[in-house]
Length: 339
Image (tube, rainbow, N blue to C red):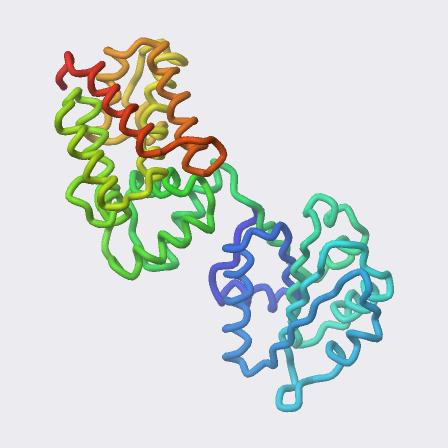
């Protein structure tokens, strides 16, 4: 994913280099909308006119010439936001838009292409536009990108998140940047300018319940059966999302599995950091490594996967019933080992 434009200074630099166009490809909504809004506000402050048009397979050059050729009644310069729909665009439209960019002016263009980025980048039209543009690939982020993007989005919204907090947002939202953005916005309204820890995030996303997801994990992985039952019952009564609770178990059991199976039970502090397991959570992982068999860990991962599918409506079942059975079962297995 190409680096997103995050400041007006970057637009200034772009224009000073005689580039008058931003091409957005991929359709990921957070990066796309951020770029469109930033440019809109930037050029509005400079008293540019703002024009939005959509181009599709039926559009002809004569259809868009009146919009793209004429200045606004009150503005000499314009920002043109051009949405290019999927499908074949006529050559006369492509040539007309390319010629507008060649004739360098103070107008600015955003070409938001809905086409598949791989196909669009292979086209001769893209190669012509590229000379006067920068490209932003707004694709769904991979597991490497999502952490950095959440950090960047948190910074833009005035949030200071700990590493573990960022990891938990990633887990809660399953790597979906739009879902993560929504959570970041909610957090920013409550904690503007403050450092937010993972525990605070869990409490906030648990509707400020008496018990949070961390407490439930602690009780179940320490083998405290009674406390586990109280915590899971309270969280269900409070209307906490079962998907969020299950996401926490997915996070910690991936680490348990990685060390127990891939590393044959051997671990270092660096292993915990790479797996984003911090503080007291490390002792819980160690307890499970020492007291759960590989078969039990694999069964736990399969149960977590099934609960995830039930939460999403892809498998029949009651997510809270299955979560209850899972966490109580874990606490019973681990009840003989106290950390």
